[in-house]
Amino acid sequence: MFYLIITLSVYFVSVLLVGILRFRHQTPKEYITAPSSTGFLALTASLLGTIVGGGMFLGVAQLGFEKGITVFALGISYFVGSIILGLLAPHFRNYAKDNNITTLFGVFEKLYPSKGRIGLAVIFAWMTFLVFFLMLAVQFVGIATFLSFYIRINFHLTIMIGAVILAGISIPIYTAIGGFKRDIYTDIIQVLFVCLGLGIVLYGMMSNEVADKLSRLPNELTTFQSDDTIFFVGVLFLVAPTFLVRFDLWQRMITAKSNRHVRAAFFVSGILSFLFFVAFGIIGMYANAEGVRDARFAGLEVIQMVVKGPLGAVVVAAFFAAVMSSADTFLGVSALAVARSTIYRKGELEDPDKKNVSVRRLRFFTFFVGVASMGLAYAFLDIIDLFASAFGILMVFLPPFVGGLVRKKPGTKEAWWSVCAGLAVFLPLVIFIPKEAFLVGFTVSLIAYLVSASVHKEA
Image (cartoon, rainbow, N blue to C red; front, side, top):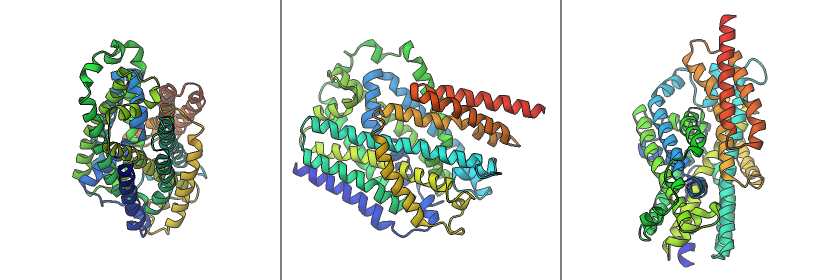
């Protein structure tokens, strides 16, 4: 118990000191994107921290438990997405610089200027809010799952409940105060804890004959099965392109010191992300081999099996680090999306220092969204469904985004048809088939864009 208290105290104090004290005083530009200020190591850690969240310990381990090596498709998709964005990042940075743009909202506004109160950029901002609000809820679902597991096994309940409460309270507070620049530096601390914790778990598994136990798993978990084709193909070919329309990744492109830094950071983080997906997928498979019954707790059950003594405290801290490294990013993006959709509709966020954007207002939005997301977490108990819903929304915007960048004259009408048709199909379907709706929504969006572009070209 002593080691658990000390380790958690060191982690929480470190994060809160960096998040609250160091970044209390910032310009609006630093709070939103901090352009051209982040080097390779910090940028790589921040990219990795955004991807490696509570969903790794729970959602990815659960998929490994249920689907076996098919879960590796997620790792491949994140690797491919990172490589694609790393190759395109210099071009996107030059486009943003040439057009005086510092956010992805600005890109949509440039491609499809608003002619009324609600333009395509505003719709994208609202959908970005919904996406990252859902992904933020995933982290709080993870915290709730974590707590329910340790309550079930009666493991230092007072400490665990206290840590969960502290995490829930501190996420909206330090995120609201520190903004994006804080996000970069707290990610470094959090990723260090996650890497150390994962290393401890994997070492414990290797000491417990992991290879021999995995070899006894059924063939459907150790080989690719035809029943998993839709999941594998969908994840592999449709998740990676969503990187192009993720606001959090655009923030990190803009904050890089140079094109060389951003390209290298995306390449390295892509490789490391793939390894994390593989590692947590194997943890889930190992739980299956050990006879764990509840897939939701696969990752936590393995930790309980293979990690003994003081090292367990580091792994517990690693879980909170994983949750908070993603949660603070998703919360920051959600709040900026709400601000862009309501009080800053005229492009103020693109040059906030000159247009008197209020950091105090942005902090208020951030804190409010953080508290609200905790309530949403209780409405959704399935982490995988939440992730699928979030990515499905992003994919609807892919056709107009890519089309707008590659065509000489982006067509506003086809962009509207594409987004409206895709969302009209996806949003109802996600209620009934949350894991498959993304494919239908994207397909409809793409067809609507191509048909509309053809019709308006002929006209």
